[in-house]
Length: 133
Image (cartoon, rainbow, N blue to C red; front, side, top):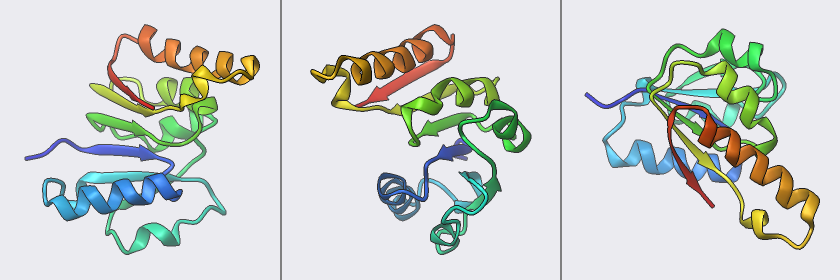
């Protein structure tokens, strides 16, 4: 049996590519995947995958916590700006995979600093993690 996944940002381009890969691999039963979708978002993009769609806002820890069901792996594809809320809302997860940005190396120091702060929050969380840029 594969781990259950909780995915933020699944309606975006990167999230859609991830879902296609996960479902086509056969490793994950779509019913073991929960995708967070904000109200008024593009949830219809998730229907074809057969995943569980959970209404919530990745920028709000309480909203995330209301729909998070203890999935073992959280894949955080939505904005790095939501990282701390996702960490707080998904307490108890075993692993976090964060899709970050090469913007951490940007000459625009404010953006780079914000991305760095999000990545450091993941590192300090005590959760096993992988950061992909």
